[in-house]
Length: 424
Ligand code: MTE
Ligand code: CO
Image 1: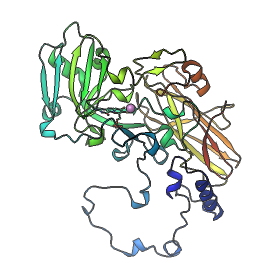
Image 2: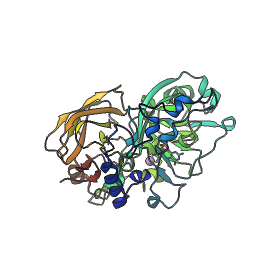
Image 3: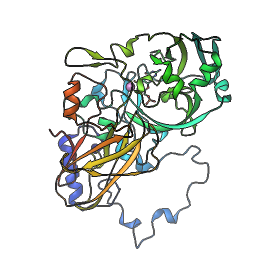
């Protein structure tokens, strides 16, 4: 079962899938080879109907069925030298809707997970302010709060795909994105309390992990929609996502969403630290680098089918599904192509379409069993259209790591297997 979840399992994965199809397994939504046990199937009474089950609170904190144990964050071993400065990816192919479950958010740490004691947690606000302040966690929780769902996408998402199709799975090509409902205090509230001086233009956000990650943030964005968040999907933040407090910078690259937020300094110019000079800048063909490229442009990906989620039926009614998002606002439309971008049809958006959040789309069609080249193309409310990879490379070259929002192509083979490819 695990094979199809590996980024590049190659031949063994293909052989495995063919074997699965040969046995005629076609149950919708079930993993490949879910032939099961006839004793539990009609006309028999299944074993779980004959037994008394676990009582309440036996599972004091709920978790998914053991049959879903393959739905986990995964990393790519050869990608980084150590796990402490690395990334794990959201299993996009195994999720639906537009909210990511708390235990499955991709993680990106520059020096591992800081284990912060909430009793010792302090947020320092100083610099060009009338009153420097230090907030405890309780101070923050006592302030007026808001709830907002936002996508969080690492600028390096799809970064391995700049020079060509690399990783076989939406989890690995696009899984550095998640979307949860944050609860927090608008940063504006804290800044108003401290009294920002008239010459202030920039903020420095600093993390409390041993990387002490720092980023410069324009004051205008801070006053607009930035949150100082302590909850995700109702629960307190998980340690890997910044417990107890992180910055939420809607629509902007996730590197700025400083976790374990410890210090905010108000200044009159950017600091030009590591994460905004040697990193998180985009080297162009002419040797110059784009800098302060904060906004994550509109992007989308088909999550089903995709390499880790092949089609298990030979033909017939098929639900294609995916996610779209834009750092500039709401998703207005998503188009889908079955033939590598020659013909486009408009997909159906379903569920809430929130500002700067993941939006779910569906496209239902009758698959005739032939090969397909699946693509999706997002458009946002500003009229921005997701570019093809060719269009993107014409402007940006291939030296970049960050901000790859080009259109993804999945090649569906006749046996239902799906591969990461590029069309020109
Ligand atoms: N904040 C601190 N303090 N340390 C970090 O290493 N990584 C950044 C950002 N904030 C980081 C951080 C990067 S590059 C990303 S992509 C996001 O956190 C990842 O957030 P997540 O782990 O909650 O998905
Ligand atoms: Co990142």
